[in-house]
Image (cartoon, rainbow, N blue to C red; front, top):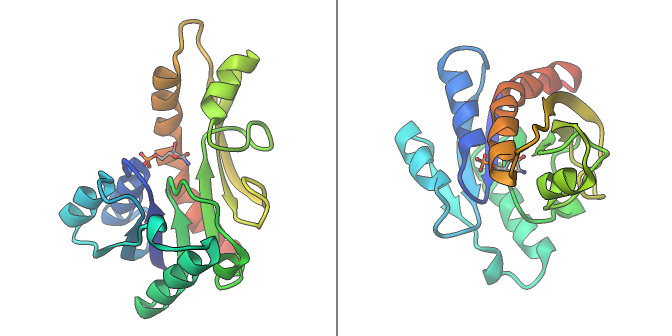
Length: 189
Ligand code: GRF
């Protein structure tokens, strides 16, 4: 599988995919990383793994569609077949979605359809649910929707803060993201 990864920040999910590839758990190669924040920590991870990376700063584009067109162009240049949004904190448009039908994958820190959007962990805490988790799903135009590939449940503990809860969710994200990519490749060949 020729992967293109999109990330905005820390990049621990990028790393989890890289490790799954290195260990042979996931038969894939990351062709290129696209990131949108100049100071994203994911860049250093890509360097360590020898993955080429490209900054496409959303502030340089007037419309979401213009950024997405550049993303598509870049992925096509790098021969990307599957796109993984691993902590990509921007809304994507049909310009990107339609270029990779059934091959655009997102990871979200809740058990969808609960708690869509950027404050999923805070919302889970505020609502008082006792179980949350993470979801890997195919991307459709509606944000944090689309067919679910894999989920993992995570308990919310009495003294959880968004930091402690996010850390526990990420352990599960790192476990299921590589598996969900392999599953998608099997289902949607
Ligand atoms: C993850 O929790 C993911 O679910 C959310 O953004 C976070 C990215 O984490 N969409 P990282 O950058 O991979 O460490």
